[in-house]
Image: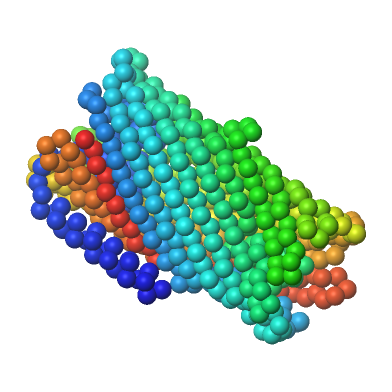
Length: 507
């Protein structure tokens, strides 16, 4: 932990040092992604050249020269508390999982845009890499023989190639984008006791002290995905409208999925399968000008994604298994604000947005041996959040070629989580766990950045820091048939401290 903090402190000092060095440079400036990062990622609230990464029709307005773009962003997320607890008071059984750890996220992009015929074409290569590691423990206060150390890990490597094209057509602009991505993802859960380790347990309803699914459901996947956009930009009178539809799917016969399990007793399971997924959505931005200095931006964004992982295989002890893991995400945003152009090109913008966030995970494993056991998790979890977000940004041009930016994001959400699991043996119900929890999720993020240009090169460094807090609790029922049953209570809590920064360059 001390090493992590030293790294954070050194990174923060380096970014702050860069920030103050750039603060004293003056030159003609034009924006790229670093400007938006310094403004708190206020996409749709204030206009920016990088908008064409969301609406490809906007690339037709990005100039007539050949431009080259580059950006890099590093985010460190320190999690001092990530707890998932379940108690059955009548049975004196407690299952308190306590964990802490961190996540690194690296984002990079290289690209170029140039004139092609009457339009403009762009090629971009993106990379997203994430590494998360958490350690913790679980101590069943009612049974000292069920005490474990835990390790929770995940990693992601996404490579993405994007081709964009936009052209004017009369008074409107049309655009499109095609993306081809390769994604490599893994989640891994490990329980360790005095006898050894158990990795990626799939029978969590058999023993509640094994329930690391509330942190993450294990898998190991790699696949190729195609994604496309169609976009139109135009004005109705003085009102600017930009509309984009988007969608994608995993390429057939281009995916692999594995679920591997082992324990210290020598049992090993390997299930092989594939990944299927589709997604669709739209983005609509409209800007109403009140006068030459004041406009009212408005945003609607909707997206839905469904991913299904499956697998089948045999254990080294003679039983057969099949499983299916489905994740479904729906996000919707609506809101707007006011964008003020001040004297000498400076600006202030503020907006208020409503977000609806829904995630549902379904996991089902069938184990066939002397008996047929079905481990079913139809809601693990089913999560809904209604969130309100305030975004504000300020851009100050200190000279003809230098800008200072700052951004503020504050959000508050009401959350509802449902957890449901059951086990049946030979079609007869054996175990059932139901838990419903309510609570809140809130956070604040502050960003700073600068924008300056020397000759033809635009350089935009930025830094940001944030704090997030998530907490829910509730009640349910724990029924293990003739073995034991009783009312239960549950609680889930997570705290995040974030620090990050980066740099974008345009030539």
